[in-house]
Every structure is written in C-alpha cells, then in structure tokens.
Amino acid sequence: MSNLPFTFDIPIPGGVPTRVDKHVQRRLSALKGQFLDQTAYEKKLAEEDSLVYEVYEIHRPEIEGELLMGVSFIHPGKVGQEFYMTKGHFHTVLETAEVYYILQGEGFMVMETPEGETSVEPLSPGRILFVPPRWAHRSVCTSRQKDLVFFFVYPGNAGHDYGTIEQFGFRKLVLEGEGGIEIVDNPRYQGR
Ligand code: S6P
Ligand code: ZN
Image 1 (cartoon, rainbow, N blue to C red):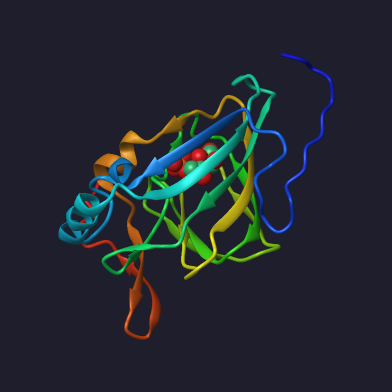
Image 2: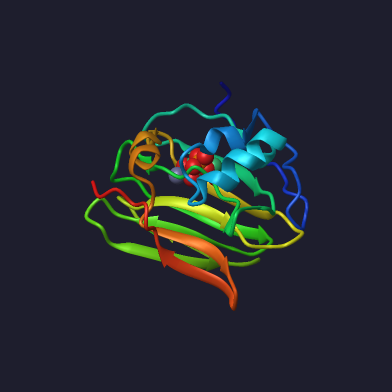
C-alpha cells in the first residue's frame, strides 16, 4: 500500500466519497435480536430484507499508528416505534477513541461503557462527536426522509467487538413516542 499523502472529497451535503475501497451494506437481517418489537421485526423482515445502512470505507493497514476513515449512511425507517440504527460495537482494543463529523440528517449516538455509564448525544449537520475510549457506540437516524450521514475516523488497531452488543443489547433505546422522540431504558436489556 502506498504511503504517499492522498486526498479525497465528500460531496456536500453528505454524498458518497470520491475514494471508496470497500462498500458495506447492512440489512434488517443483520440486526436480528436488536429491535425492541420483535414481532414488528419479523413481520417487516418477511416482507423485505431492507437496507438499513451503508458504509464506504477507505482501506488502510489495521495497525497502531494508522487511521481508518469512511462515511456512513443510515437510512430513514423504523421497526415498530424504533428508528433504524447501526449494530453498534465496542472497539476490541477498548482504549481506542473515535471521531464522527455529521454531514447530513438528524439522529443520535447511543453510547455506554462496560461499567454501565450511558450517554445519548443528538447529531445534526456540522456537529463533531468525540467517542472516548471504552464507550460502545451505535448511531440512530431519526430523519423522516434524509439519511443520517457522517464521516468517521478511528485508530487502525481498534478492531470491532460486535458480540457483546449482539448478546446484551444497549441500555438505552431511541423510539418514536406519542409526543415525539423518546430516549428510554431498554426493557429487554440483559445485564452483563
Ligand atoms: C467504526 C465506526 C463506524 C461504524 C459504522 C457502522 O469503528 O464506528 O464506521 O462501523 O457506522 O456501524 P457498525 O456498528 O455496524 O460497525
Ligand atoms: Zn467504532
């Protein structure tokens, strides 16, 4: 891999980057067990395995000292009353941080530590979110029509631990309530 400096562009507001090495697409089936309303999930999945989010990644070596970058698009949609969201993960190397820069759409970043601290931060265009080391993170799109689009960058050696979230879920959920968006405790959270 070349070690020369390089540039690429992200069309404003929030388009596909001009350099893409890998395009990841995650569908409803990849989020099995994560949505609160399992009946609504099974029904929706039986109709169509819809695209929930996409990630455009720039390839760099997955080693300490490197930075991994890309752009994520979380599509609008809901399962029952719960907005479309990413799987979410801890970094395998827990002591690694991440920076997000929001380009388009509205949403939240749902975060928590292994010790049980939680934080749910609103996301909107122009906002930068710093995810400190140790905090699991999941992005949620609450826009009705637009994708939630953000640029991210994190250490090359971070790795992804999806299993912990798949097994236990997040402590907080983002739902559409009668009076608008609600952030609630996850009644199905299985303490770890
Ligand atoms: C990677 C970073 C993002 C997410 C992406 C999809 O550390 O947090 O690139 O990978 O937004 O989310 P997930 O949870 O499926 O990896
Ligand atoms: Zn991450």
